[in-house]
Figure 1 (tube, rainbow over the protein chains, first blue to last red):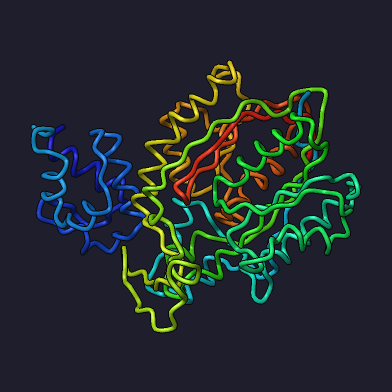
Figure 2 (figure 1 turned 90 degrees about the horizontal axis):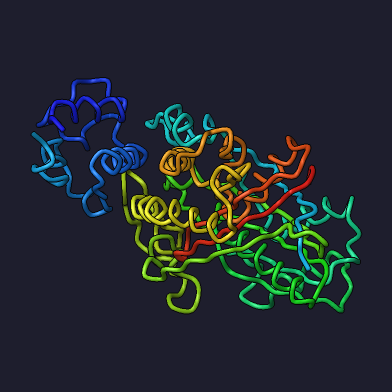
Amino acid sequence: MKKVDFISGLAEELEIETTLESATNLKDLDEWDSMAAMVLIGYVSNEFGVTLNADDLNEITTVESLIERIGLDKFN
Amino acid sequence: MGAIITAIEYVYPENKVTNEDLGKIFPDYDFSKFEEKVGIKNRYWVDEETAFDLALKACKKLFQKYDKQEIDYILYCTQSPEYFLPTTACILQDKLGIKKNIGALDFNLGCSGYTYGVSLAKGLISSGQVKNVLLVTAETYSKYLHPKDRSNRSIFGDAATATIISYSEIDGIGEFLFGTDGSGYDKLIVKNGASRFSYSPDAPEIVYGTDNSYTDNHLYMNGPEVFNFTNEVVPNFTKEIIQINSKDIDNIDQFVFHQANAYMLNFMRKRLKIESDKFFIDLEDGGNTVSCTIPIALKKYSEFINSESTIIIVGFGVGLSWSGGLIKIKSKL
């Protein structure tokens, strides 16, 4: 998947009203809460077959860090 | 020799708590999105009442159309017992005025409790030990929730249900399967107050997730881990249940899963490629009532059937524990 497509898909899933960029810290978003975390887990699981656990969610900050956790090899 | 579910009743506490009510307690949180995704508009919480009080009401409602003297076994599912001891089911026998020559026991399970209960009742009946089992689920998680635990207070509601499972010429209860993974025991837990750790008045407040708080005296749920467990285990488990009952997914009229949260249910529904009209989702009124969600859903679903319906029921959660099986319902319960 292209990073840009992932980011726009993520913004749609999380219903982000501002612009989402690689450097955006997900935790700083108004929309970030435990429900958004659940939606994020679901989206990543469906798109990449990657399971984000509770520790991953604690460690993830920016969109870029999320992409690294998913695995850079899954993006082109 | 078979068994069948013949009647179900349920009750909620009187105190209805809407998302607007919660919005006043948590003014910084937008509950409209919660309502849309998780599917809950209101839940009911007890004030002074106990789960047992709710159970009594549910049973009395059931006895308006069922002769209680026919009952010869009580299975009582709760994680909100009246006392450490005695067994709550024994008190229930007395308070309901049910005859004394019956069996009665409590079993401690959460969201997998109802499906376990149906399977246990089937076992008691098909082995010829009894004819009519009263299966009660009663839960008041609200008593375990920390006042500042917004996430769990949004999700969990209190309720009690009463089901009659009886001897039948037809097999109304098919094959059941079970799963257990105690390594996840601390993913959903009330740590203090029993044998391992005493209740501690000074238990420190712990912040978790996104601005939620609890102490070890309260209920804690690791939401992401429970969500992942469910999505990893339940879809394949459901396929196994269909298989062991020699059915195909197309032969099933309705799937009634534990009503945990609408987003998660839809997530699993899509993984299983089940159409939404064959997959029960209704948490709007009542929320996640733990072992009570499946009987409440069955009661609601049965209002709309006019011929025999083949249903897969699956419960999953605290333990970690899961179970499920096939049932048939002929008419309104």
